[in-house]
Length: 108
Image (cartoon, rainbow, N blue to C red; front, top):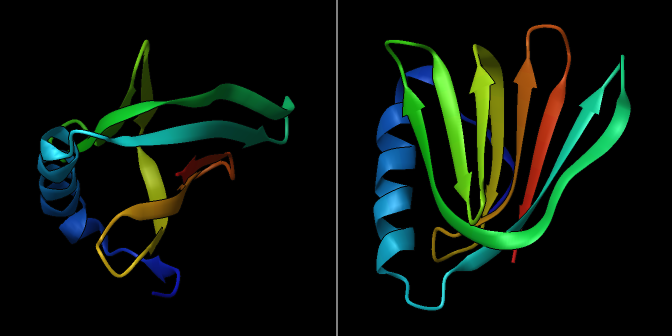
C-alpha cells in the first residue's frame, strides 16, 4: 500500500481496531520511535520495543503510542501519515504537530 494521509475523523476507530489486532497477534510487532524537532533536532525515543497499541482520544485530542516500557503521548496532533502492508500492519507512521515537530514510528 502507499503512504496515505489519514482524515482526523478516522483516527479513533482506525487505531482502536489496529490495537485490537496487535493484542491478538502473539508474535507482535516491534517499533522504533524517533522525534524530529526544530528545537532539539533528531532524538531517538526508543529502539525496537514491542508495540502494544495506539489509541487516539478525540475528546482530549491526544494520541498515545504504547510500547513495552514506554507510553509516548502526543497532544494535539495535526496530521498523521500511515504506510501499511497488505495485511493492514503499520510499516511506518509520521505524526506531525502544528509546530512542525514530527514523531516517526517504524515497525517490523
